[in-house]
Image (cartoon, rainbow, N blue to C red):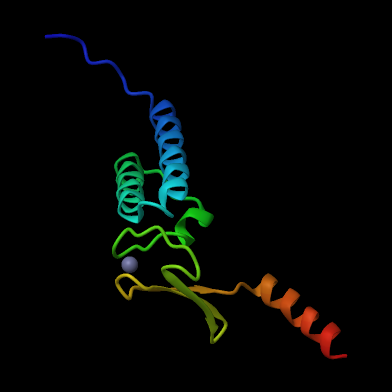
Length: 119
Ligand SMILES: [Zn+2]
């Protein structure tokens, strides 16, 4: 029987990261003309990430819909609002909602900004 070669996990993860970045770039590019293709790219990137245990970047996470894999662009196919100290991103394709808490640091900065603006 042939000897099994050890899998270099770092290499696998680096490749996965590279491919995911590429797919996200493509999704961004084609979204305006072919949103369905962008959705396909997003779902491929997510699948690569889950197979290789590589997370999406925080920025990428915000611009996709977890429920329908849509690539989200505010004002086009998603709504961004703040509510109860959270940023609420709603997908207008499927109605999926993602709530991101505003962190303590951020809140501090916002509070300072409010103080400065209101005297
Ligand atoms: Zn959706």
